[in-house]
Length: 564
Image (cartoon, rainbow, N blue to C red; front, side, top):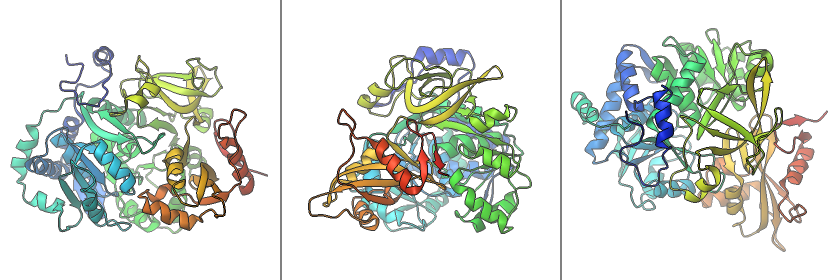
C-alpha cells in the first residue's frame, strides 16, 4: 500500500511516511488524486449542470471535455507534469476550465491573484520556476496580457502566456488551443498521465507574514480530503446550487465551495461581476440553496434584496467565517461559522450545535485525526480553557512546510510535524463537547476584507519613499472590511509625509498590488517603543481607535467595539 510520494520534488516538504501510513490504514486519507476524483464525478454526473454562468449553463460532460482539451493542449506545448502555471484571472468559467485542465495534465497551478503586480508576480514566478502564465483577457481593471508579456523578461523559466476570454499578439489564445485539440484524442492524452496522490497538485499562497506570500504545496490526496470533509461536514448533495462570489482562485472558495461542489454533483453559480445587478441575474436563474459570504459583501447582498433583484427563497444554509450570526438573526437562515487556513486544519459549527456555540465560536475540526493544541506564544506550554493560545496543529490535510523555505519552516513546523499557525484561538467545553473560537492573530498582518496584508512587506515599500524616515503599518477598524490599512509615518527632516494619493502612486511605481496600499496616513514625530526598545504597535492601534471612536481589544485583537 502506497504511503509516500514516488518522485519527490526539490524544495517540497512531504509529511512523515509513517504518519501517512496510519492515516491511509485508518481510511482517513484517500489513495486517489484530485484529478482522478474530479474525472469520476464528472462521468457520474455527466448530464447534470455543473456551472451556471452569464454565458450559459455548463454540464459536467462539457466541463470534462473542455478541461480534457486544455490539459492535452498544454501537453502538446511541451509542458510536463509537475511544471508550474501562474494564474491571474477573475471569476469566470474559463478559469475553472483551465485550472482543472492543469490538474488533468499534472501541471501545478500557482494561485496568484489578478491584483498581484510586478513585486509579487516577479518573485513568485521565479520562486516557482513557472513555465506558463494564464491570464484573463477582459479584466476591466488591468491589461493582464500586456502585464504577463512584460513579466516574461523577469521570469527566466517562462515560456507561454495564455489568454482566457480574448486574444493578444504574442500570446496563445485559450479558445484557439481548444479549437485545435480533438476531444477524443485529448481524452487519451490526459488519461495517459500518471497521478500520484501523494504528490503536489496545487501551489496555494499564504497570507504572507514575512515579505511576499509564501508558497503552500497542497498534496493531491490531502486537498481532495479537505474538499470531501467539507462536503460531508456541511451536507452538500447533488441537488444543491452554490453561490460563493469570493475569488475562485482563493483556497477558501476552492476547498469550501467549488471543489466540494463539483465532487458532489452539485452546481456552482458564477456572476458576471461583483454588483447587485449581476448577483441578481445569476441568482434568479440558478436559485441557490447555499450561500458563501463574508461580512464585507453583506451590503451588496442587502442592496440586491432591497431592490427586488432576487430572493433567497431556496437558500437552506449559509457559510460565513465572520457573519454567521447576522445571517441567522437578520435573515433567518441556518448558518455555519468556520475557521480555516490554507496550511491546513478547518473547523465548522454544525446546525445542531448549541446556540452558544454558533454565536460564540468557530466549531470543531472536521477530521477525527486533526490534532489541535493551544499554547502560549513562543512556548510549548498549553493554555487552560477560555484562555487565548496559539493554534498548533497536525493532521491528514495539514501541510508539512512551505515550498523552498527552510528557514521559515524551521520556525513554524516542529520535528513531529506540528504547525505553529500564529492564530490565537480559545477552547471551551460546552455540553460535554470541545469547541473553539477565534481570538486574533499572533502575526503582524492586516486583515482587509479577508485579504491578508503583511505589515513588514508594506513597511519596507513605504520607507523607500524619499520623504519617509520611519513607518509602521497597522490595521484600523472598518465596519465593512473588518480592517483597513493605516500607516504611521515619521517624515525626514524638512519633509512632509506623503498623502494617501501620493503614497499610492509611489507604491504603484514599486509594483505593489493595490489592495496593499494604505488608506490612511498619520504623521508622528517618533514611533512608540516598549521598555526594551521594540516598536509598540498597541499604542498606535489604540491611537487610531480613539480617533475613529472605537475601542480595541489588546492583546489578541479579537474585535473592534464602537464606543458609546
